Length: 242
Image (cartoon, rainbow, N blue to C red; front, side):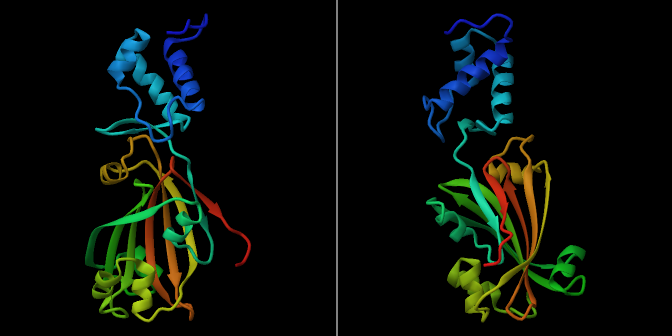
């Protein structure tokens, strides 16, 4: 163990030491750090001191703490540009990363005030909900709830079963292209559902994007509500026309 500098608190010394090891690639992006007990034994301190040090590393974005799994070195952050055409898989592939997704649920639900306003529907109108977990290099980064007007797309679920992705599903339903009309961005702490699926600590914020996509005639076809892990994704605003 290295000599602790005079006047430096134990937890800060531990955080600085591990941080240096991460920056010099003694630990690679995605590596799991030793357990609290192992680090406590290494530095000759109690687990509370280690916990504070690791918590500070998470606050600076060097590591992420996944409930029930451990502490991992943070991977390179994903840029998520917002433009007229925003497609998750295309965005990820352009960064030489591997996108994938998992269907979490699909259901017919009544439109609440927010969804109804976004889609231009009466409150209570039937909408198709498709919720997916978006992954980048097998790491969860987003929870996306897609809402579509069922009156316009009565065979939407059948099309999704055939295509398994939103863009080809819409093409199958006769929507050759669609554009982003509006995006509203907020942030908050995650709920238990988001913590579980995105593998988040309670104090890691999620970025919440409410978006309306329209067809080439300007008619709303999708209201989306996506929650991104703020430590793995940064939203980039594209201000130039395509």
